[in-house]
Amino acid sequence: MKIEVLNISPKNLDNNVTLDIVSIPGGTFLMGAPDNEKGSSDYERPQHYVTVQPFFMGKYPITQPQWRAVAALPEINRHLNPEPSHFNGHNLPVECVSWSDAVEFCERLSKFSGRNYRLPSEAEWEYACRAGTTTPFYFGESITTKIANFNGEFQYADAPKGEYKQKTTSVGFFPSNPFGLCDIHGNVWEWCADDWHENYSGVPNNGSVWTSNHSNLKALRGGAWDYDPYNCRSAFRFWYLPDLDGINIGFRVVCDSATRTR
Image 1 (tube, rainbow, N blue to C red):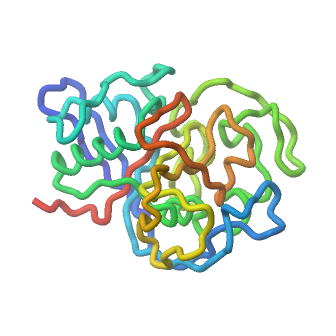
Image 2 (tube, rainbow, N blue to C red):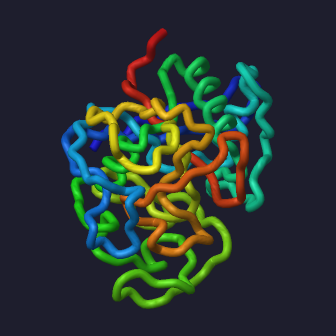
């Protein structure tokens, strides 16, 4: 596993702000949920094989200091509120950001860094989340609040009920998955680049962003601090309007290469 640490602080900021990006190896995986997976739906079917090219992905969801640093960069298409989050903390993920805000963040970061940063496709996100596993969660058949931040008043499979923190937790508080990614289950929903589709009929099998539906909805993945554990499954898919936000919605970035383009 290769991790690169990129300094993303504009020159007018005193404190260094870095972004850890993890090298995700390419491969082929079975995307979606089988019929017998507890909590699954036809949104997650039919299961299908997807071949994903190597890429780099943020080790954590974008944090509030990272957001502020990029929000201080020159505007490209829209204004970014430097302090959008409901829960405030240095190592907390940024939330209350819309899909359109996240895209602006990626565009500003790309121009600043010389790398092409973007939101992941749904296929890239699920591939990275699973990290070679086929179970509902990368760590197995069930989930507890000792390994992810979700509404512990509910339970999945044979797991016990747990703590409901009622807020986000610091990124990296829980263990990473086999690819080295943290907070991939729970904490905040993560925007993907794809339009929302009701199922996988017609989905590309090369891991690319799927926009053929021309939907006014965008895909979310991963579950959140205030949602049931079944929403945190690797295969679970959700949707939201691209210009709306919420106290449980964040994102993480990907890039195709760690090599500068300028």
